[in-house]
Length: 78
Image (tube, rainbow, N blue to C red; front, side, top):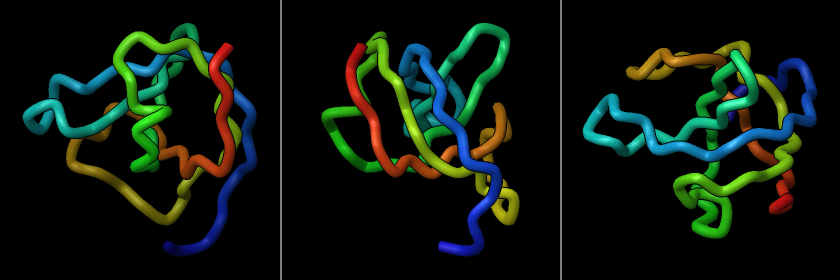
């Protein structure tokens, strides 16, 4: 999984990315977009408002490159 980056707690809306056939998930928080690194189906629901806690993956990039990758450690629906 690599090294940890900057720890964050962010509120936003979960969106499925239009890139890469819609297989990537993003967290939209105001003007910021984070790519979610999680396979939890309870989190990955289009349009769901959540508070997500995790670490920015400073050692990883993705094909979508829509924003920093956020490795989710905890979340709750808000």
